[in-house]
Image (cartoon, rainbow, N blue to C red):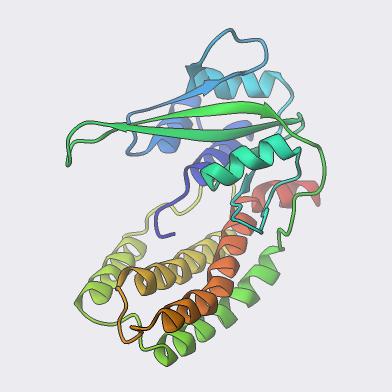
Length: 260
């Protein structure tokens, strides 16, 4: 979770573009990031895939006024509102973007090519119909911030109890890299987002990193299958809180505008 989901970049910089706070070229560059190219397919009125800049302009012409993020997981359709076909595609991708102002959603299809160390990543955003309804299980920023504070405490207790505390050279290096990025003043969100959303997203990424480290460090002291299952069961609620907070942060621009 330390790395931004592609849906987060698309929603954040797409919202900034729709608000007139960034240029189309700047928005597209920020969305693409380290990938090679992004295209948008199955857009109404288009016969084939189009470039990201044209795709964003086409969405605005179709009436899109904002973009929300969905980060679903099995049993947790976070940010989705249907129909089942769209939800299934989003669940397979583990992320999606849902438009405001038009009943459309975008699901990324990622393909990679090339040798190790020189991987060429292409992303196609498939535009699909969605149901206009309240997205599932998205908290407010305030609620997300409170949940995250508790999740950090719970994560420390759980990992220590299961003897897989985020410690050691690998964990320390990862946390040092995280702090270095934060101290470098990286742009966590696009222009137009409130400071609280930036704070919540940064904290959510930190919680997600701790959970990822716990999974990546192997068995640690938990060698029995039952102990490994207990670790996963204990970490699942913490990871869920981090995902909910990420969605709340990315959706803060749209939610704030709708509140007037």
